[in-house]
View 1 (cartoon, one colour):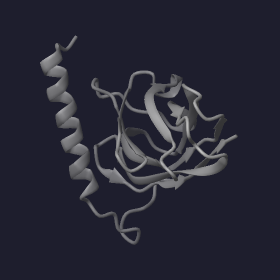
View 2 (cartoon, one colour):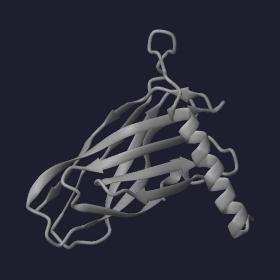
View 3 (cartoon, helix red, strand yellow):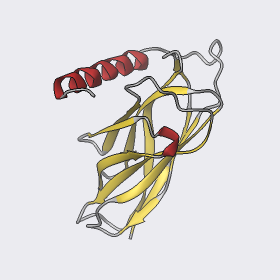
View 4 (cartoon, rainbow, N blue to C red):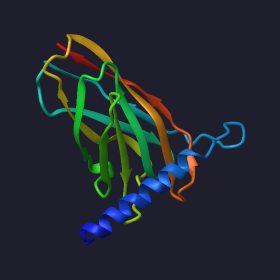
Length: 168
């Protein structure tokens, strides 16, 4: 297994790789879409509730090596406290970082070079805490800046679908 310094170095290399991917421009005229749909699920809870799960699913026609994306909550009333992979991505690590403007940045990657097989269904579940002073309303959970890499670490385009979180 990796020691702490090795793991940090690997994470930094992974993030650098995804930053490089995000600078690549995918031209829909010359790069065929692989039919990838990433959908953020729905959730609901009262103000002050902790550890509310929201699933993120993917429908993919080709194997996928990794994903980086931000999921933004309108109003910044949700705090992402973690990420847990499902059976579809059980050999992957889900790394999250809560940003200042109501978004969580996440990277889904396998340090062993595994792939997410062709299929449909949940990849991971985000855990959210709802702010104590959150107003009663339904807000959008909007994917932004999505980067997906295929089995050859080549960026591919993906369609994203927002979810909804109701604070009641």
